[in-house]
Image 1 (cartoon, rainbow, N blue to C red):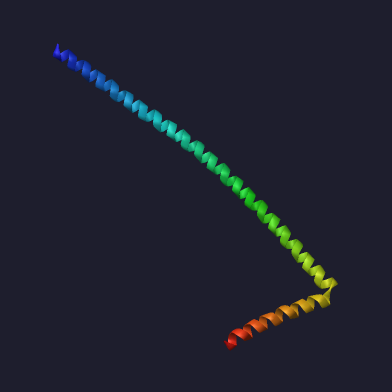
Image 2: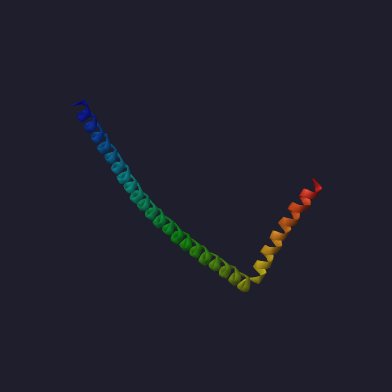
Length: 103
């Protein structure tokens, strides 16, 4: 009789170990599927960020081109004003540099 109980306990422990292994395997499978899902979501977010960066870069390039075009038009249509502004900026730079060298 005690022998039968020991055999039953061994069977129960064997069944418990099998159930634990199955549970671990199932949880690893769930973790892997969740990791794949998170990875796909992260990749989608990264692609979205890249698209936004490309869009912002294009907008900045267009804005820069527009500003350059406006500056060229201003120089071509108002050359005296452009020379005056350049002289003013040059004068300010010279004044700042000469003031620093005397201190």
